[in-house]
Amino acid sequence: MTGWTGGKPVLIPPPEVWGSDDNNVVDYWSQRSFFTVRQGKIVYAALIDAEISKCILNEMVNEAKVRTYFHSWGAMPLMEGNKATGVVFESKSGRQAIMAKVVIDSTGTGPLTVHRGRV
Image 1 (cartoon, rainbow, N blue to C red):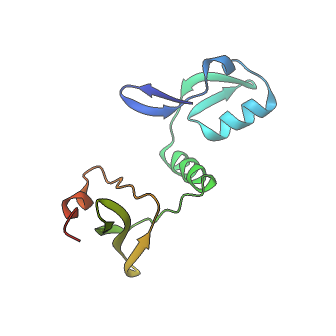
Image 2: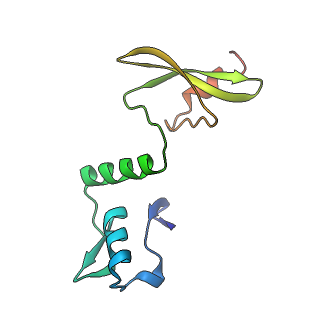
């Protein structure tokens, strides 16, 4: 379940499991959320450790079979008409192109959009 806290999305256990002591539910949420388990029950309290969060989120992305490329910079999109079909990017390995069904520019600044229509 995704909720909103302070304008930012967070993964939270749904209210119906708060207080649950079901082992499967407790195990799931203790590994997949920034919320804690106390005395074998799910509680609504946020504790965030950036390093642990990074590892958990990376595991979740891998479970979803999303291929990620760290320390890579998008150079330009590969287009078919108005649809992005891949990205040319730079990394320590050099320049590479990756074709994809879905292309997501998750930089926050959208540098690949400046190339739209120019490829």
